[in-house]
Amino acid sequence: MIYSRITAAQITDPLQKLCYGTRLLREGDYSARVDLHLKNEFAELQNTFNDMAARIESEISLRKKSEEDRRRLILDISHDLKNPLSSIQGYTELLMQKSEFPELKIIHQNSQRANRLLNELFELSKMDSPEFSLKTEETDLSETLRQLCGELVPQLEQAGFEYEFHIPEDGIFVLLDTNHFGRIIQNLASNALRYNLQGTKVTVSLTVKNHQAVIDFGDDGIGIPTHLVQDIFKPFVRADDSRNSETGGSGLGLSIAKKIAEAHGGNLTLSQGGDKGCAFRITISTI
Image 1: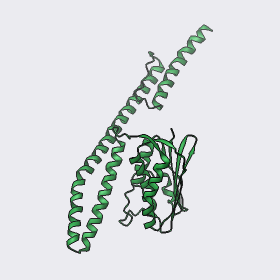
Image 2 (image 1 turned 90 degrees about the vertical axis):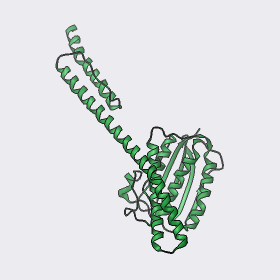
Image 3 (image 1 turned 180 degrees about the vertical axis):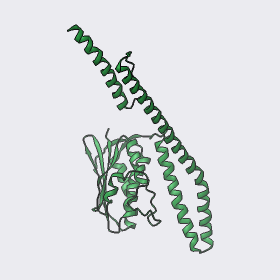
């Protein structure tokens, strides 16, 4: 019996150590290594495990460096191109005041579009940076959302949209960076205005469920194609596949909005897609 226990321990102890190392790898600790102090078959398994872990750690490190280089490149390019584009816009506007060449209007429109794309690329890359952080403070979300919806009314009316807001009178308090949070609502509204027809109805509601402030932003417009539902928050994904100059969207607005929601400790999800309108849901923990 003693011999059996000793033999079993010589098998179970290395297995437990290997299981523990595997669990660390699964949880993201790629520096995990196993030292069994053995020279039998388990030693070969130990060496195989450690070699695999070292390769994974190296590949993850290279991937992180590549991603950081990509973000830095986008930031630098966006920054370097902003000034020339601003000059093009300024001189084009000046020339448009003195002449009526239709080509000037096209140059101006495309320079504006390129400038918007650069600004959004810059903002998206900045949010991916480790240095990015919000400046939150205790805020009445009900009052903030009323103000944001009030700012949307002129845009909705000009586009011939209908609208309906359901915001409670009682205060709902959350930790909020109001400037960044307003960008979420504006981006959702811009998408609704850009892709839908006159007569579309936009609805915004605010409720509290399980200590979460829940904002539902929806419309009864053309909806989102089924094949895009899973990828709608990825950069450069657009409901309008043609990416023409009429809509002028960059495909970055929803990506930016989702990152802002996540930076608040919340989320932005698509709660309804398809061809019968769409609805987005923003959640943020209440205080």
